[in-house]
Image (spheres, one colour):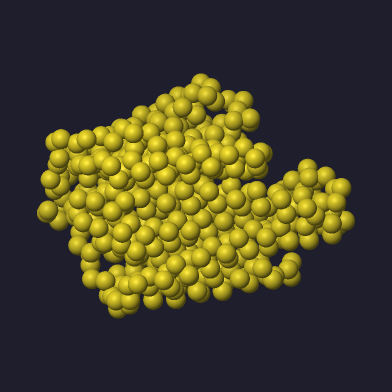
Length: 479
């Protein structure tokens, strides 16, 4: 493939990565305006969760189709669906129409997100891939930095509709570049046996799992029942996949323990990632009373260090075994987070920026390593499926832990109220609300102890990551 063509495709992939990743941060900024105009307060959580749900469900399906139909066709389908979903989201006359349009966007994102990594793996050797993926990761960093600013600008100067419309020209550009510049290199299978039963069991498993997560805070019994149904559906999926010639999820990939460890590590680290992205700003606003903008910048230090660290992965892989890299980096992260269990209100607030920076540095190394190794450890005809599985793991890790952290925080708070109003805690958490000295004296220890509980769960995830990577049988440098 000529260098000029490679550059065009890399630009398209970069824009596609930015377009899908900024979707979360830019829409979050516009949510108050959307909810107000469409009278959708009761359904506001579905604006985000529907997008996440359809993305998660379709990711492994697209991964398998990409290994059979080719990357180009499946990527184009994803771009069309995402662009159409964006257009319809911007035109939404009601909250229910918007939720359906967001579901369509998610159907497209389920193809775009994993296939950006797959196309990079097709075009570049294992040695080249680290630098290219590091460059592509800058799109994630830019989305974290620019998303809130761009969303605020569009809402203030135009309207919330434009946070969706802005994707339409980008989607058209990506489609044209891929159509005219990208040449398929995969041997396409013209006769594919579609595993419809496998798709049904996968969909049922993920839908019940993700809805169960939404129910943790409101009805724990219903959540447990849904988790049981999700587990049963998953077991039936495994049984189904072992019988068919073209399985939706080729479980043969998991026969390699190092591959399995990459997927689990990436999933758990993504759960840790969403923890500090949500609860560091809450910690700073509620206990240090810093403005929302200042508290939000704590995530910025993480994004900057993530980008910097991702450029180091190639050199590290040439010198050390993945096991040694992960154990070293995660141990440093673990020690940084362990401190959060013992600090009180006298801890300097800039310390959270330092911990976030350490966390982002570690994520940039380990998650990039996870993606590269999961692709390298499977045959070329399973490359799309392997990338889709690790992408699905990252989505599920964040989604599952959002529910777990939220339920844990509420539980810890309620156990300490002793007759006090829960709504008073809601008022105390926001730094924009004025609170009395007495309220600070009462609620500060309640919030502090509850946040200690949340990050106790985070530290437990670190311990699990260290244990499973210690058990990795591979001790050699992988080339």
